[in-house]
Image (cartoon, rainbow, N blue to C red; front, side, top):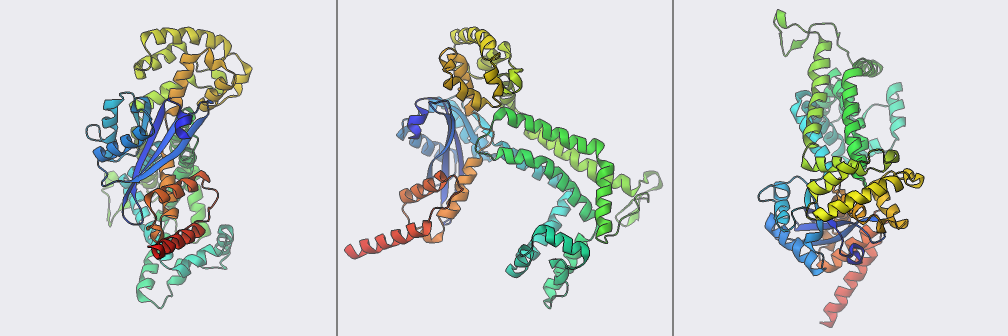
Length: 481
């Protein structure tokens, strides 16, 4: 069915590997493509066991699958992987191996993974933030290690717990553990409670909450099944702009919120005008700075700067340039970004194998008509994404008149922003292939996983009944033998 939908057109592959319940390496393959009817599709294609995760092994397995279903590697328009060296390595990774067969199968390092790496790197580079997450990890482990304590937290809604804590009607779980009869738990709880009641902990907690709230919108968009590269690139820019605004304009409001929270919960607040003491020894007279200066510049500004540097580093390469140039085809804003020269340059620079010099000439001629026709058509002004533009050109049959433009838009549409679909496949694998199901044959397992994913992860298929039937068939077969 997927082969019929691809119909000899361009496609993109997403690949990732993970261990299943039986510690066997599994590789999942996802295809992204524009269907015959102009709709963008992103489908789970196959999952297979592999002996190892070397680039050569993965290349061989993927090539075998594509060959089996007559999907030509030459039609691969993009490769989407995570940042592991066996996948993205410039010399020995999976992506250069495919580039030898198809030089325009551009590698896209999953944007969601880039964002994750940027957040992690910034947290590691700033000592106060790294220490905060270390303490937070201890807190979570202390509470989550006991089903009873975890149940106590889950038994109340968040708002109810906050109200009770504020009114003094209810103690926090960690505070109650300070009275535990278990000496080890009591010591751990005392240490965790002391950290949580410190101004430093609350300050960094509020800071990371502000940063992660800004980043969350981009994070959620990058995990969606239907992503638009142009809108995603805009969100990267707006995310950096909002973080920059937090640094430049919001310090006073931020500090006031932290102090207000501490006052409400009886947490000691430093005198911000007092000299800052580093460790146990006061700084030299000429190095005197206030406590506010320390929190403002050494923690607040420093953390945000690290985050901005990482975002700039992670979202600044050749593929980002390709995606940015795609904005010339951006249908949003009444197609105001439309530019004939930029579109021709995009085709010449990144897809010279797909567009000959004659094709470029035809593309330029079509673009001149397209500018007076489609760009000025009010019906197309309602379109906001590249995928919608591709679909509308098919519905209106305009793709027949603008074949070169339609070809370029289809190529752009296959470019992925992230490879979150592969992660969803592995999440589904954990539901389908648990220990009791390891006796299933590989083909039966793949069919179950495919069925599970076809439910769009919103419906639960009754796997238990499937397993019961499977076990009874095994028993019957054994009796026959």
